[in-house]
Amino acid sequence: MPTVTVLYGHAYDGKNEETFRKCLEKIRRHEGDSCVYLVRSDVRVRQLRDLVLRELSGCFHFPVLTFPDFIKTIYRKSSGAKRVISSLEQKLLFEDILRERERECGSQFYFTRFRDHPGILSKVKEFITGVRRIGIASPQELAERLRNFSGRRRQVYEELVRIFECYEKRL
Image (cartoon, rainbow, N blue to C red; front, side, top):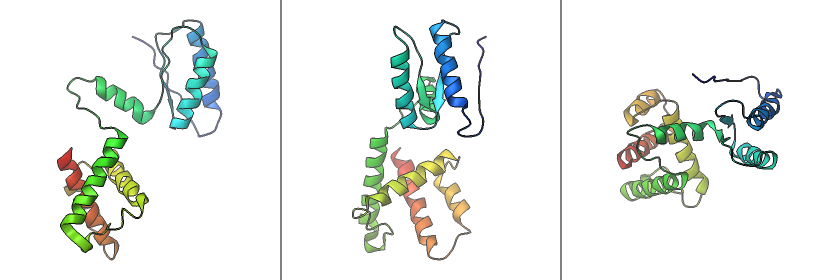
């Protein structure tokens, strides 16, 4: 069975550069079967992929990924996996949902000005994907968790639950 090495520590403690150099050396010496290097951001992915291309020549397999991209890769290769929608498809889907909710609710729709303020769409998308990421699997569960909130924000939360319902139906 292959050895799996996981290194972790405080942010900006120098472990990344040192570890990356060790991975490059192992690949140069043909030690180990494979290496997957996980980083925090897409910017860092691009930086390290460029470095790999500069430092290593020939055929090699050294994927540098963010953790979400790594999980998507594993999911896509699993049996019975459904297609993962792209970020653009997801944005367009949320835009359609907001337009649909606006038609249904008219001026009562909480996010009526989403066309004037593109950040609203991004924040709604970010909220719903974040909710799903932390394990809230259904609009009903989200509604239950938000039930204790009251006041002016209550209308926002209720609309977010409805948007989540529409999103789940469309998926």
